[in-house]
Image (cartoon, rainbow, N blue to C red; front, top):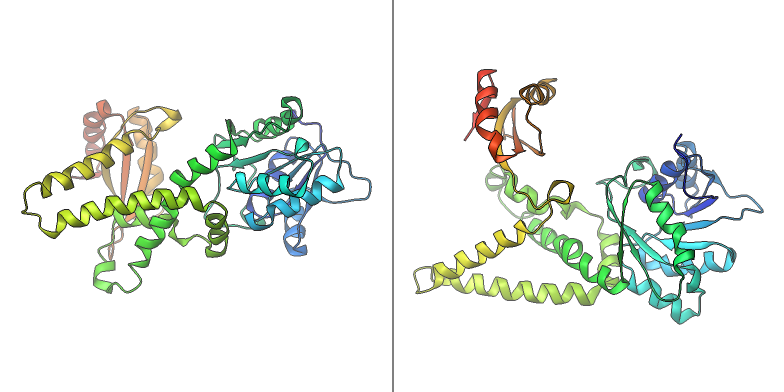
Length: 360
């Protein structure tokens, strides 16, 4: 068992995906984790799966982690600060300025509170989706403010490092502006694009490939949760959406008459601008490095994908990323394999010699 940096106990309020995952990760390090949840069922499930124990009289947690929806985060944090006057309290809500502002207005002791936000999750929620390794390698923002000392805040740093996440320090304002750009607006765009599919003819949907699936991947998110998130961070999201509307207007104007002078140039410049933006996204291990993609046809039968991975390893090529897509109406899948450009020719030749069908 790996020794924990925290002393404990750690109280986790909210036994959903994040709370249960935090509990599982900390109990794996031998910490005493106290679980609390408004739902007796969620609490029982999280305890049964080994994420911690129920609260008991006399509990004196070192650290409290509040994992509840954004619209009640400040309420629960204030309650925990009052109930446990010796504990440091953090929350993991996806907005950071609104809870801090509300706590200050209430006169809560924010010298023992600092918000944080792990950028990790899964498509499913609830305690059954919890995983001890959910946070490994993922960014976890600590939204520092002047009212808490560095010495007191070290407990949150220890929590993050214990769970294998990467600590990122930001102000609450910078955090909310950042997640508006990289999380909240993409959710809105994905949702609006997916909504265009609701009345689309089946003949069109049968042609759906990687492009539309990529754009709409997060559109299946929980509406109630996102109403809360967007309502807690409206100004940055609105500002970006207004700028995006201007971009759309330029595109729409250019497409009104593609043969007009400058129209094609406008479209090309907008698309090239997108290329430039994508190139700024950090790649594997944070490196700004682009990869080449080869597409391999894989029979939709047990063991074929494992065989492909094994043979790529035998060739001595490192698989940098992977995306799978199934061909409509056919028992095959398309594996898009991202590798270093200098390995493309060798891997293509080797896989073809082993009987794999390379597409494109």
